Image (cartoon, rainbow, N blue to C red; front, side, top):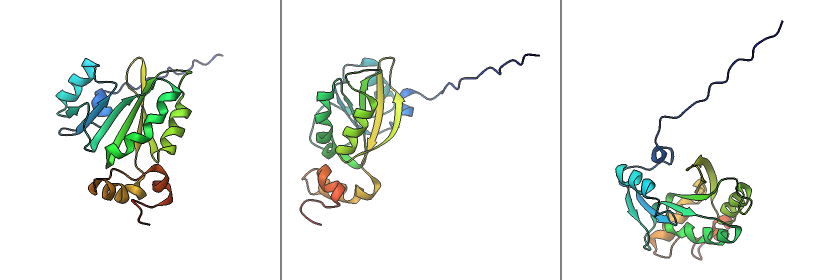
Amino acid sequence: MTMKKARREEFVSTRSRVEKLGVKAGADVLLLGIERDAAFVQELRAAGARIRTSGPAPADMIFATFHHRGDLRRLASLVPRIHADGVVWTLRPKGSKDLTESEMMRAGQAAGLVDVKVVSFSDTLTAEKFVVPLAQRVRHAAACAEGSGAVSPKRLRRGGAGGRG
């Protein structure tokens, strides 16, 4: 007597891409390297996000593309560009041997961030979500308020900010 395997049912989310990415109406979204993706820009606009491609003010969300290992050196420079409760979404090619998920995760940690989510951004890109650790957000916010940007990743790990312990 052979037993039939139960057919596995796939869950298909009904949420849109921007909902999965946590984009809210009024969010200040900085696009770096993905601004030519017309469909994504339209989705952001439809969600009510304020989109920009430059500017020194900290953003609520940054979407930045990374294609090769060498691009990872830019990640730390994005930390001062987000609010304390902001998000950096890194976008990298799916299945790439030039830049792996583990390399991206290590780069985020080296930048003083924690990875909290991975999302299929498109047929060709994977998105990884990084945030400032909860215990460091007060210091990060204070550094941004001083106008000096966020604390460095090294100071985030030590628990200091702007020369104050």
